[in-house]
Amino acid sequence: MVSMYKTWFNGYVGDGLDSATERLGLTFKTRFFGVDKVWTSNVEIIHQILVKDFNGYVKGDEFRTASAGLLGHAIFTTDDKSWSITRPFFRRSRVSDFEHLEQLTNTAIAIIKEKEREGRAFDFQDLISRLSIDASTLLLFGTCLDSLREGSSGYRVSGQANSFRAAVIRSLHTICGRLMIGPSWPVLEIFGDSTASDNALVDSFIDPLLDASLAKKAAGGTTTNYDSSEPDTLLDSLLSEISDRKVLRDETVVGGETTASSLSFVIYCLTQHPQVKERLRAEILEMLGHDRTPDAENIKSLKFLRAVIDETLRLYPTIPYNLRETTRDTTWPPNKAGEKPYFIPAKTSVCYSVWLLHRNVDLWGPDAMTEGPRNCLGLQFAYLQMSFVLIKLLQTFETFTLATEAQPSWSRPPASWRAPEFSDHRKFKEECWPRTHIALYPNGGMWVRMKEEKVL
Image (cartoon, rainbow, N blue to C red; front, top):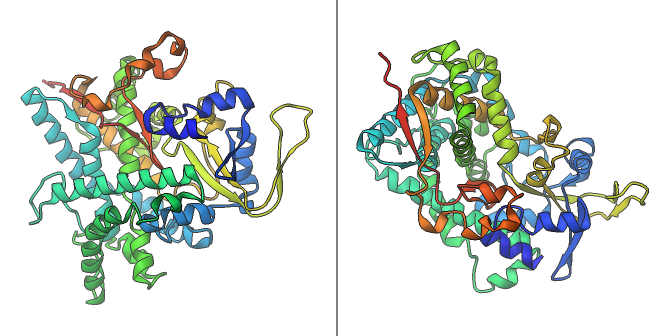
């Protein structure tokens, strides 16, 4: 357990856990400070947790306590049915409205073109995170911060957005460390909550947006500042179900950082596999040409695009590890056929690894994708958003190149990953450093160059 904790800070995702799995099997138990935790990457057990026996597992007190300051009582932490109250908002008719996303994507493309003219690499992760913040605040509050175009609404928006993102990431890292330590983590924070200052910064970002939207709603208007045939926002939807301001705040501490990271890893994979990029671009140009804006039906028809996104998410899953707690005594299948089932008592902390599941050479096919009643409430929105942005990028740019020389030196893959003993390990050939807090992200950003196709 101590080894896994150290490699979480300094190693490749899964280091320690993968070697433990090789020694002990797909399911094993650790004990840290006298507390047991059961780990698994067994597809049958993960299916049991997420689908077959969904009510037998909850997020649990351990996760809620560790993440309370940042996530509060929201969809990521609650165990009652309130986690699903936002689901009606993400109906297909809404998430396939690309008008505002197109405006934001065009702004991002203009920035990339400027970088190309200057001969400069850029951090794609940062750019798309800004786009996602703008898209998310528009979706949540009806207000676009224009963090892609700093200063347009009167605040120092880019600096504010950067500070917000950095605070969220630091807080999530602390939460992840707490979860690895277990229920004894408060002993290490006896002199104060390590996330307090970052959570205060997050509140300073969200509170003015929430206050302005609530005031507008109280005055009898909708919370959106865009003309639309369907003007209500996620906040409007939540107000029909919730009146407590704290709960509203907690429900809206979700943004597009996971979507931005997933898009970054798609671009990374395309830089590593140019033949895949060429095939994907050909599919897009055949259907849409260089200028036509895609709609939801177009996206649905682009089968290879969906395959590329799915394969990226298999290799770089958004949530590499997840935590549950058993609500009752249960049994799990053993590691070896013929052994007795494993007895798992009620209130046991369970960590399942989608990362290891998706990299299991025997199970890397379509059955290796996470699903179940509690899948991501904005999953369709995220898929359509990623697809739309990728289509617009591939319509415009003919080459994507990883700019490893621009990557901050501290965030590059360690030289030790190139040691001969790792020649069969994926980290041996990684040109970026995947890291994780609660979600996966590229360490130090994703630095690339893109070259525009000159269409005659």
